[in-house]
Image 1 (cartoon, one colour):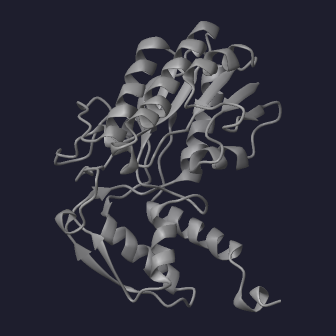
Image 2: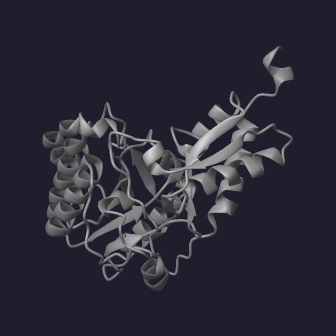
Length: 301
């Protein structure tokens, strides 16, 4: 079984490459040098000639604020590239799995978003991801779109690492407390994608469509930050105070959804995948970061 994975330097792509895959599975990790997603015209040929049994596309242009002024690149990577992948995989009759985002919603719903709720992106990033979703649905019936939210891991740029970096230098951090979501470990997303792709390749009748995956439990960014430092403190680290502020207190070029909470019952029903609590996933990530950080005594050697 030969599976193409894009975005291998990103959080989810990296975790897909780190998983222990079953014997007989060959993972083809395409770097940007080999498959530049900003050049969709090259994608169909690459997939057509690769002899793949499935394609997993976790790659994305995720610079939410920068996308407001760099919309051409965002649309190329988030919309045109998945369109080319969907066309190529449809011709070969193989499944395509694409990672999407909570940003396809406008964030005004009072409770958790389900897969069939109307989309309404409020920025370029969300709009480009929504367009990619529409293209995949339209072109390849054997698709999975896996929406997720607030991704973190021990590598790459993410909220957990940003908080730890800022907290090391500051005694007070001010964090937005009126945006709600479900933090999600990249490793758990990768594990979910692996289970789904193996099912899709081995079973032509395996469920397809749009799914949500996010670690269990809603929280605000402020609550997330406080939990990061609560767990970080148990390892003997000094931590800052975290002050709650409003979105209006922290203006950004791109508007954020006030509610990013994703319901995951469809995934549990179709694939028997039940997300674990995000606090548990956070503990694993902090442990990995701690193991990867040299102790001061080692730094001076």
